[in-house]
Length: 244
Image (cartoon, rainbow, N blue to C red; front, side):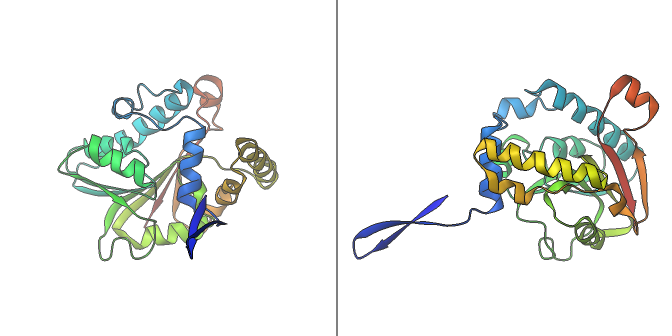
């Protein structure tokens, strides 16, 4: 997190504020979530953390089944694709082109190396208005990534601007809270990253409320508070779809 400055033959260390990519990569290392090529090829079925990947498999299966029923060509963008396992699964659907976007260059490089398909592309960049120029998509997916954006409204408006007519944004694997729960979770988050030795990461992790979807044309596709889920499966995350 430091840089070396050379001045008249003398090296001095000058501290600088690390950016999100550096912090995120450090967290992934600390959490032991930097996987080998062989491991990511097996995701989500053979994830190292079985409970986490069981949950993510359920949500991915629901999304893939929904997209498959579209029965038409889909241009799909996954924002925050990480090591690319979900983007690769979506590219296995018939009649799709998939772009996976992430700010973690190491994972984008790994995804590009491991998942080589003619209809799949990985892009190393932040999600901003200039990333795709005039490209449009039928589906934009945020899987375990919306919590890294400070404003739900701003990022979803940006996602909507990339949609073709009739397009959809899908949010999965993302925690949502009521106001009291958000405050408690934020404090817990700060303690977690502080104990990890990466306290600045807490400034990049946001605790959103499901009410932030008000004003959008949205549907709750999966509700974790439903009786059957609470009794049997206990998947903790909403699946929300926004239609343009």
